[in-house]
Length: 532
Image (tube, rainbow, N blue to C red; front, top):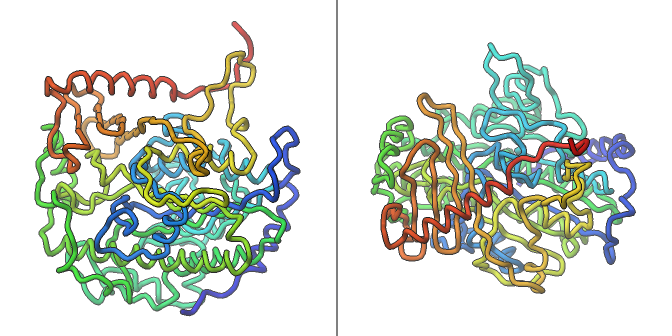
């Protein structure tokens, strides 16, 4: 497979030019770590549910590299995103805060560039930080009549107004940026592709697909030139520039398998649509509350499809996932070749899930099903246990505290209540390290999910969800009827128990839990100057 031209020198030069301002000595007040500090690689994908991995029980998809990673560590079967939309979720992944806390509650917003981030804190403590692939911390699209700036504006990149992200972007000292999906791709990758392989970007268009069935289509982007391959190549190039005694944090983020549902050869031919196992609820459009039925008409392009189209969509999605798995395998091979694998924390996750036909839905929206909220969350750590499937409930909020625990940095930099005399409640997540290393069992802690959407006409959607080991409770602001599922007796979430008298105490207990979590995670503006 042909790789993109080597950019190692460029990355190394960027790093050395910025090393002084962005890499001060480690904070001496932080606890010392025995031996060399661990490296960190976070693999992220976009819009992929937990059930789309072989190691999580999928009978069709082939993900040998991720399966091996799960076998060598922990694959959390009950991991949840804290918001089922790209930008709020991705902001949580770098800040460790809920969307209400970091302020990016929906797509189309700019995450405050001055906010404290995990990459930034790691860079300040001596880590080299690099991001390759999708970031999505600022909007892709800016209406012409809006006076705003976005470093991730597709129009600004395509016009040449922006040719690179600034050094230190949300704590990343260097970046290889990919924005968008499919034919909407832009950024460093698209500029390289247009320069080195003119005309190839047009092959992402559905009009240039060699086969199409509704929203699913098959591409002929040449081998090695797809953005997944480019991302893997850039990640490998970065790893080749890291000094042996230099700890690093690498974000390797793939835009797939987010729609468009379009894989490229040979992955577009990997799965036979006729043999794909569909969700048992794919042809059941019944909604748990009445007003959601009206919502289906507002997103008709994601609720109106037949079985043939769905089979092609799922087959192409699995093709994209297998493509990503192969790319991750390349990066892991480079880690091993460079002698860095053993001392590297490796995480695989998705920003949120995808309905993928369940309950006759596609993409993401206001239906709080497991297909959307439950995400892959695989951890392989240098001194961790090899457990494989892990039933503990976790969420994206646990990513930052865990990595900062392992790296010895701690979370104090996130405390913005300077001057307060009470104990800072800390970030809302928790470190998984004792659990990953087998020294402690992870206590039950229900997952909190927020969703706020005001891009569609009518009433704004404000959804709050709490998920315990057995039950899920969902409350929509402005509606007296919510949702209560018993995930043990009803794993397909077809029966709403909100008004069932036998579940009244469960509903009450979960409502208390939800209110408690919302109260503890209310934003804490700071600092506090005085007592009055």
